[in-house]
Image (cartoon, rainbow, N blue to C red; front, side):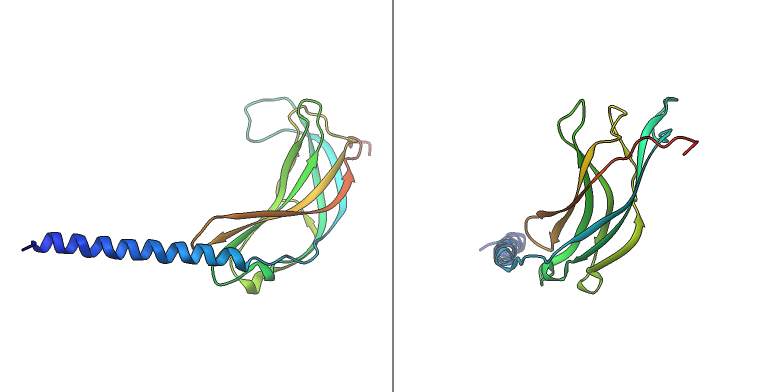
Length: 178
């Protein structure tokens, strides 16, 4: 009665519907598996503000740049379960600015692919990224460090969360005489 092509299309449609339903159940069930992470310890060791040139722009004017060294202890193991593919963890420095009320800059990040690598214990680590301010003046302002993470599941929605970790002040501009 039906041709072979119609039967194959019906079979493919059925399996697609079943796969979608199973994926929906997996995504819904993993929402109940979310656990709270333990304490995060961040200690700022050293902050320097210097004048320098940005490599990514075609300008010749110098800007203020902040270099940060920090210690970090965090255990992301409770966030891993059977639907966790990987976790993206990052450290953000937030400070008020003259032009914009809130300024956030990611200074360090890492992708954690498995539970075995989920315990972070960093000592005297230099920030991956230099902070450049839009207004070219953030020295002597208070800033807060926030540890954040993004759980990337095999199936389902991304989950973002963060924990406040501490505060520091940007020091005065370091000159050649300092």
